[in-house]
Amino acid sequence: MDLDALNLRSYRVKSCLSLMVLGLAFLAPSVRAMDTNRPEISRFIEEVASRHHVDKDWLKRLLSEAQSKTSIIETMQKPAEKVRPWFEYRKIFVTEKRIREGRAFYAAHQDIFDGVAARSGVPASVMIAVLGAETSYGRQVGTYRALDALATLAFDYPPRAAYFKSELEQFVLLARDGDLDPLTALSSYAGALGAPQFMPTNVRKFGLDGDSDGTINLYSDWRDIAESIANYLSNHGWVKGEPVYSKAMLIDPDVEDLHSGLDLNTTVGALRKKGVVLESTIADSTPALFAAYRDTDAPTYRVGFKNFWVITRYNHSLMYALAVSELAEAIGATSEP
Image (tube, rainbow, N blue to C red):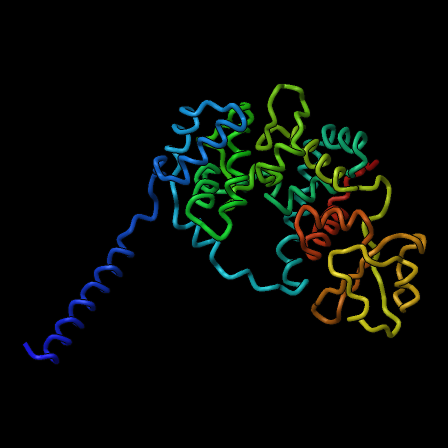
């Protein structure tokens, strides 16, 4: 066989192999059971069992029930959602429907949220607005089993495996302690749990058993849910009675010079000296951040205070913080601390 014929045959073989590999990729199951004999999964079982005195056989049986789902990985790999201008973002979160439903939700659960507000200093309207933004007041808690989401990302998504192994570990402890059913609990594709969408670490750190029934139920126990949200915000520095933000106008300042991102790296007095006019009469010494939002006709400006910053700890976004703030104002819970 001459050299050209040999090369042609080699090319054909390689082409066939490539097509076979491509075909197998399309035929690969989108859902498959976790193999607990995989070294990284076996090591996780050993470490968690040893670290927390968890029954190793129970943990192995639990993880054998987990399913790795390509849809979860595909969602994680999607490019970050385009940055929406404020007027588009607001249309999603601060709608008449969401406001109406928030008022109805408050009316149905007023005693619970007013009581938590009185004890914590976090307004009922803010707690309810967080629920509205996160899960439409608990109606949309996610479509994935949390076990599947966390195990898939812990063992089949290398870019963030360390983080999700840690979250899976905390999820295992929640299951061990009886705070959720690990085989039925639903979550977001990233494993966020319940009406407030806490990651397992935050459930363990900030979740509270508000009704003292021995479990932390963030899916349907509104007392637990309210106490946990308030506890999260309080632990991040919520200041009772302080305003969240102020509308602002500019008198010929350099907007780029004013921009401070998510940090309280300026003061109200410093902003006033630069030409920012606040509707609020809050003291010049108040820590603050400046935020500019792209609206339909002209930019919208806000000056956020400590409580505005605290809302960004829930979701690291200035637009999220303003959406929650405006939704809380529109819901208008009447009993505030």
